[in-house]
Image (tube, rainbow, N blue to C red; front, side, top):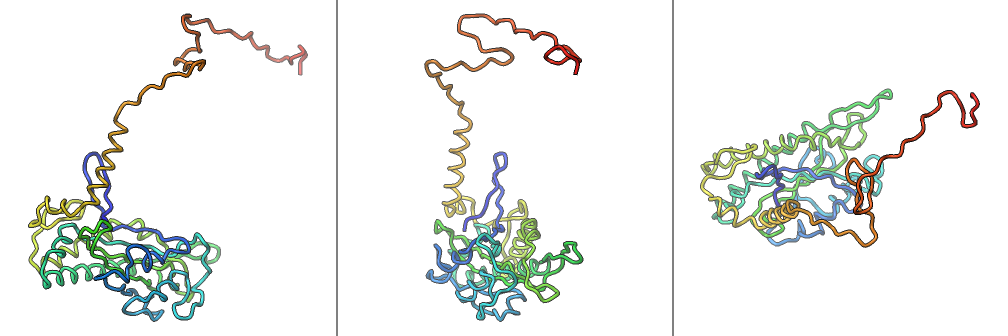
Amino acid sequence: MQNRRVHTRGRVVPMTVRVTTLKGLDAGLYYVEGPPSYYLDAGEPAGVWRGTGAVFLGLVGEVRDGDFLDLMAGLEPGYREPLGRHYGEASVRGFDVTASAPKSVSVLFAVGDDATRAAVLDAHDTVVAVMVDWIEAHAHTRYRINGEVATLDADGIAAACFRQHTSRALDPQLHTHVVIANRVAADDGRWLALDGRTIKFDQRTLSAIYHAGLRAELSRSLGVAWEEPANGIAEMRDVPQEVREEFSSRTRAVEERIEDKAGALRRPARARPHAPGAVAPRARGGDRQPPGQGPRRRRRLPPRRVGRTRRGRRP
């Protein structure tokens, strides 16, 4: 999964924690069947359950396909009983919070020895767990009380965490998809929809939690030195920019495509010749004129008679 980048006036600002809304009947299939397969690809681990909502439903340890698909369908895993209202075809089934390590950290994981790779994974998994805990602590749901819509704390979330080590272009890219089901327990015992506004609006907060924690963990375990953070994100000082760019083929392809589009917009548009018999465009502030003739005087309308009808009678 490639980092999302925001282009602003000649500079590129990376956003390495993003939130995606998952909708439709096949919202969960991507993680178990789609390319790449999150369970069957060689070297990629199985997903792991997190959240007290998952524990309440008996979902602990590795994620199994059937349990995950049941939950994404709004059913209690193992029993297939509805958790709240039935979903429609276009209903929101969950949210994917994707946390991606800086490119230099991904490169360190790709080229490091076994001890270094284990330390990088441990740091990444630790701060992803901290991020999930923050999401759970701030999770809300909404329902009516005495006719008014109230926002209340949710009693835990159920999240399946899928860790991946490469981008779609097969560049080193350590990242985790935290797939949060759109069902949370309310304080009255019902299973209701998660109020997704918090995680959607607080993507910068989630990014700050992840990156600050990752720097702290790697500095503690490996003694990593960092460049000055920009927008809360920092690269490792000892991994040169040229190396990072070499392992960012998808980023280069995207930026080249954006530059091509921007260049096309900057080129002046060619004037289209008028077809034979077509009327020339009206000049600003004037009427259409036949070629070779000067401006003609506007025809003035007779003054309007106030107080009389068209037949000359008063109304």
